[in-house]
Image 1 (cartoon, rainbow, N blue to C red):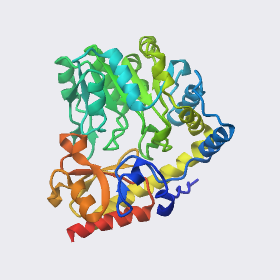
Image 2: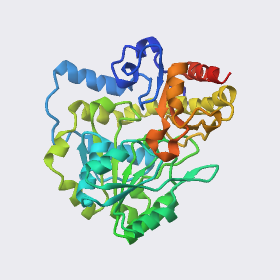
Image 3: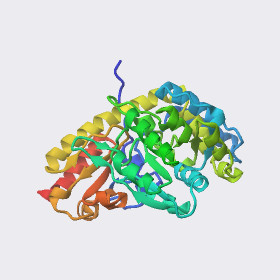
Length: 385
């Protein structure tokens, strides 16, 4: 049975929002930079939050707000992955979870591998934990991006102590294959290192691709890995502050349990309430409708780029609502998003923020109405014409 795509809110309503996407720039700029989507909230989330507000339920987050059990059921239902709720702790957001785990599994000055181009906060969270970023770029085969296992092994052999994985990958939208993840786990284990996997975009894996949770990739991955997950990207809940740190082994579970209670106290109550609703079966139809809309938009963007920006290179992503677009052929410099924002009044994300490999690139958020995406690309295309 076909799923009716979710409809984005009209721009007149979106401009009433007070989030970064709609307040950073003036009304003359169309925003496609930060990872916020333009869809109405899932009804189950709206109902849960409305009830909490009506009750004045705005106090401290309880020790067990139900998120761990809700996520375990979601992971089983959507990924076929068995998660033990007893091995899950909550915190404020994914990056905070990563920092706190890194503080436990690395020593000051240890090197942590990140696979560039990658989500810009990775470059900040590693030093925040006292470690040092070691950049190991993805391999571009011409048809897909892959982890460069040979280069990763060389870094581990030279002393790197951890790998910060993005799975699915931001900004490329790559869903790493199970075999690749299992090989990565073997390499880490052979050198006494750990893998911390940011899996925030996992619920947005598109048709034709299959998401493999790192901890489910192999018994070795379960032993040496940590996953940090959240409902925030799939359900647009970043402002509510709730993420989960997931483990699958006694030793890694002890590490997460050893984190200060304050790490868990930072979980927002509204974030926990919204996450329970998001991960419930009641929100599955909404998520499927959003995936249908994003599926159409990732294909539409390909057509729009061919029409308005011939020469742009774009690989349709396996997951998420973010497009990684190479504009080097246009000759707009290392950071073309600056020219585009100033002259076309369209805000894309700045490619160089994702690492050296981002020079000449932009990241485009296509979690929006198709007509808004079309208007944005027409504006940018006018710079070429």
